Amino acid sequence: MSLRHAPTPTSTNHKRHRETNTRIAGRWLFVTRLSFVVVSIFTLLLYVIGTPVYFAYLHTLCTDCLDDRLTPGKLQELQALGISITTYAVYWVSVNLLFALVYFAVAALIFWRKSDDWMAWLASFSLVAFGASFPSIPAVLAAVHPVWQLPVTLVSEDVLGFPSLIIFFFLFPTGRFVPRWTRWVAIGSAVLFVLGTFFPDSLFNISNWPIPLLFLGPLLLFGSVVFAQVYRYRHISTPMERQQTKWVVFGAVIALLGLLLLGSLVVRLLVLLQSLNLLLLVILVTSIYLLLLLIPLSLAIAILRYRLWDVDALINKTLVYGTLTATLALLYIGLVFALQFLLRGLINQDSTIAIVASTLVIAALFQPLRHRLQKVIDRRFYRRKYDATKTLTAFSATLRDEVDLSQLSEQLLAVVHETLQPTHVSLWLRTPEQTTERKTRLLPRIDEE
Image 1 (cartoon, rainbow, N blue to C red):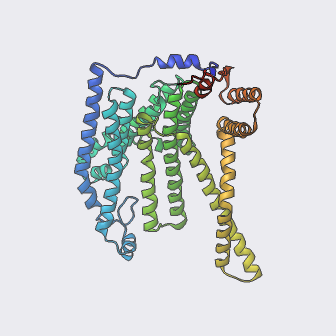
Image 2 (cartoon, rainbow, N blue to C red):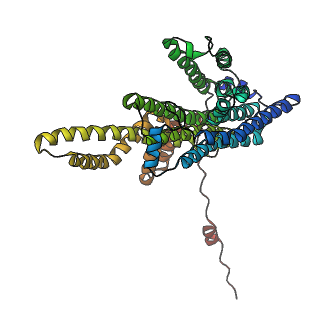
Image 3 (cartoon, one colour):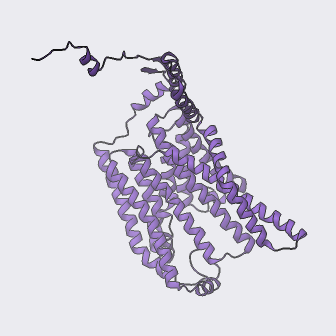
């Protein structure tokens, strides 16, 4: 059977795009490698100096602070849990160092494997800059010892971290600004971040903007990033680059949505309760750190190992189980409140029966709802694969019953045309040859004396 596929509308773009070269050679290769090594060594030096300072800083108490230090009331909660302040300090130092270590290790791995590719270099540089600036250790070092204020500012998230990440997401994976106007958005936002850091009292700092612009500015920036990636994915990227884009977008979306939801939850609880349980606060902040680790891990897979795992299956399961978890959680809460209201009016019982009944309902609904969601998501987001699977399943059932060779050939051609959609399909049937046993039987018999 021979297949000839139809040319896609974007074949011209693909051909032109394959000519894009992201390799670094000559003098620039030395400059980029040297810059990465210098920034990495400098940030590691800040961590070596700042770690003992941060550890001692966590042993001090404060009355009204929003950092990692304890208030007298939080210290009493900690002692009620049987945990010393030293253990608390060791925990937060470990979380900060683990976060930075993962970012540094992934950046070093990408740089070691592809240091002559400037997109890989930009990814490594962005990870080092963001991984060094997001944890609290450099900021505490600058606050305790003002002599380190300028060095810490130079590698802060507003000077190197966010600008380099934004430029990377505008360029990935082709290394070009697509559409072309996005270059001005990327450059403008990077300049705005830098100027806002060095001139905090000016309008360059978005914190001084009016409230409508304070929300509109970041929304337009991240909306432009999303639009650029979607446009590139649909019109420019090759199948290989689309797999890379899926990995990066998957990790970034999960991390940023988790950061947004958990951060909003912390702020909301602080507003409602005026104070937050120490253990709950530690769990929420640690969860934010862990979610942000998805960014370097997804970048590493997208650049180095995108062929090894199928991201579509991971995205599919995430959509299914994420939607299932949210649906069951809302249903469980609604059932508990509804049953409590009904039982209180009928038999004057407490909430135990309502909780048990709701749990049983959720357990009974889990599998049917999961299968239903799987079908809906396959049909909505994976329509071609879903239709191909149904077609092949139906053909397998026909194959067991059909005995007419001509009918079977026609159905085979129809299945191939429907699933692969080639421009032309040809089927050759080889004429069966006589077996060796049959040929042997036709030979003349020779009698021996």
